[in-house]
Image 1 (cartoon, rainbow, N blue to C red):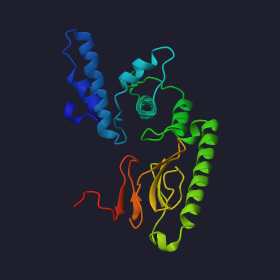
Image 2: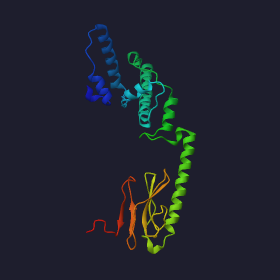
Image 3: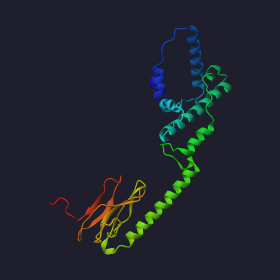
Image 4: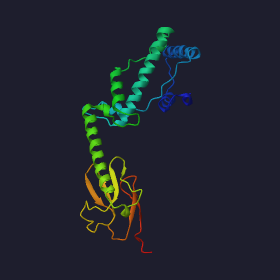
Length: 243
């Protein structure tokens, strides 16, 4: 039976059931199962809603002053939606099919406003959205504007280089919305007084420049790229290995 459950929680619930010895409770359970089984044959819209395991989340919420991270909130949103759909189905079965035993399984879900607010605030993959608050939306807008300003300024620096001193496809590179890498003759760190074309790393959040290469002409360092901001791949005419 557990193999036919909608998800692992349902399977665990089925597998964890124990035999009952009370005749009255056994008869009541069998009658409820028989009623729902008959409904499943005639009503193809009945379905079980899979839900994530939110046991730890509920335990944490029981602690006064506790707060949830975005991912548990996203899982809670899924559980609330499943509860609302299931409650509506059980109510429909009770009223349209007079399925009173099945109707006793129904529990009123929390107000839909909670689910709506979570949908506005948290994406399905657990990212906090601008809809979480007006202050957050304004702050993120300011960050986007500041980032654009930085990118425009860096682009101007790159564009001001002599065409013979930079690669034709040279461009400002940004990764993960935070790290900017560029090749330039400029000296933003104070370590490129000779004006050679070097590679520079800029952290938009910390507003910090770092000079990645420190070479002298005629060495060329070109086309930097990064995925994490921790390692940088680039082309260079310098003999780093001594071979």
